[in-house]
Length: 207
Image (cartoon, rainbow, N blue to C red; front, top):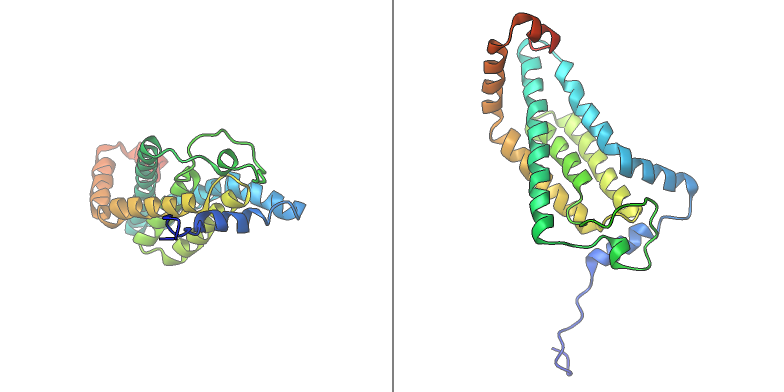
């Protein structure tokens, strides 16, 4: 305790990291435009990359890939549900609501900041590739998810802690769905395939 009875000042690591990243904005039109594009659209690119697995491979390999895609989708939904619960019980303001010195590059509603829903989806999908042992794809997707999180902070939409919590939620959700229940998803897929008419299976590339 200090002589005046107050606790020593705690360094605001989250705020300091936000300052370091957001202060990079506003110096280059090209960098700002890239960050805005990444913050908005990189999650769509990650979704598309995972969806491609639906058509990759033959036989058992394709079945495993499709089960991974289904697991990734379920994990993303689960991650968003957890994020919604967190936001309901812990309402943390966004940086541009919380502070006056934020350089905001993207207009956004002042809804809760923690965790970043974009990052939850990105890390859920990347985690699905990781836990299903698509290691090269997982590495690329994780880098893309980190880039998305960085861009969300750069543009003033989130604190670094919002992204860190989102990463934890997404990776945990994907582990629970894909890592622990991957075999069950394969069995459910097989049951659905057996129940569908041959023509439908062909259209959906389930054969």
